[in-house]
Amino acid sequence: MKRMKMAITKRNLQKYCSIVGAHFIGCPLSFVWIYGNLSAYTDSYFRFACYPKCTDWDPQWLLSLYVAGLFPGYFMVKPLEKIVGFNWTGIIAMVMVNAALLGSAWSLNVSIILTAVMYGALLGTGAGISSSLTIQVVSGWAPERAAVLVATTSGMASMLSVIQNQIITAFVNRNNLKPDAIIGPKAYFSQSEVLDHVPGILIIYGTMTIGMQIIGYLLITDPNRASCDSSKEATEGSKALTKHQNNEYEELGARDYTQNDQSKKHYGSNSRSSNCIDLLDVSNCSNDDHYGSSNVETIEENEGSKQKKDEIYSYTPREVLRSPVFYAVCFFGIAIEYGILLKSNFYKKFALLYIHNDKYLSLVGTLVPIISTGSRIFFGTLMDKHILSLKDVTIIGLSLNCVLCAFWFISARLNAILYMFLVLGLAAAQSLAYVVLPTAALRLFGPAHLSTNYGLVASCMLISSILSPVINSPLLHTFGWQWVFTTGSVFNLLVLCYVTVTNFKTQV
Image (cartoon, rainbow, N blue to C red):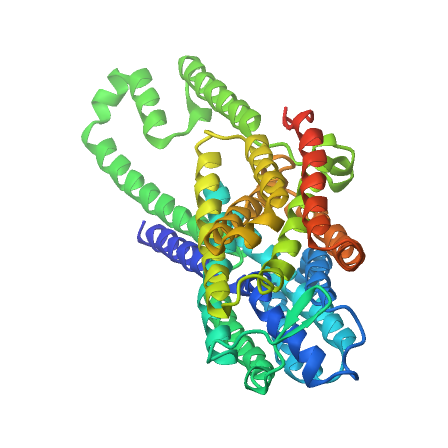
């Protein structure tokens, strides 16, 4: 009994440590939330500090290739785990992430292409592996709370960016200088007081990331391995307890036999039935006892059938690709991720044309992850309590994104406060992608092929990351900012119509 209690206590400790650790290993995802603030400085650095040797590509591809790199990272988890194991998979991801971040402090002076490739092949892929491991850990240790924990783990990266955004602005633009160069539709910083600190902030960001990931990987335990170890310990404890009980029964039986031999002869049949019940040996019982055993077996079969009925059917990746709801979720992800890339790339660059206060815009960027995290937890809780369905949350996200993108261009021209509320509204709507996508992979398609199916669902990130710079750059330089934002609004409207008519009930 003591051994069994120790196994249960150890498993509980592993569970809570793993859930805490999962919140740390996903910290590279904060790059999406700091890039909007950081890119105002990196674009200026490319334009004035190392021009023309390093200005060989559109800087939009830095974020786009990072997001595209997440996609192969999701599919690399299972093969890596089979080859090197769960722990080494996490270590490989950590090395990839931080090699890219620390290396980009040097590559900024060399080439945008080189920096973008590093962010895609190393930073994005490593972050994708870390993100997939995070979902695997929380869904394995606490499947009943998966939606909320997915929201909090992804929200941890967002909350981390609150601190990181303040550090970036305080370190790079200490005197709150205004952009002093307008080239085409964009404003730039050309002051050396700003540009000289850009490589250093990437080193600081990389150091923070590696520190948090080390803490996370020290805390987490593979839920599959822990289940096997726990079952083994519990089985050994159960065998020891059974052996101890059998010894007690033998001693008691010997003592009762000498004391009650006459009574056993007189009440032989009753004694036989009683001894059978005491020793839980149905095979030695009379026919009357057999009916009791049949009832027990019937109850167990009914419970097993009920449990089987309540289980979620797991779709294979091939079945997922044939499911209409997969394409609805994927189009939702493309539309929302397209909006996220718009916000991350342009919320500050566009606003600097009309709002000449860098620290105020950094404050807006700091509030974005706070609102985003609150939105994820709020809607994740509503989904866990079955107040809102997955389809309801999908429709809410698309509707808000559609309306807010339509008013994006005019808000900054009217008022700085109005612009702040618009950006925060976009953050609340777009954050739902980080709840809908993993929850859809788990609840609609089942847990058996979670990593692969989540990779298929998250493929929308790859598509939107390629579409964004290809579409936005020509629109911006040909038609201006208004058409860039209007395109995002129209795209969300079209996807909203498709999602509304799609049946989300795939489970039977």
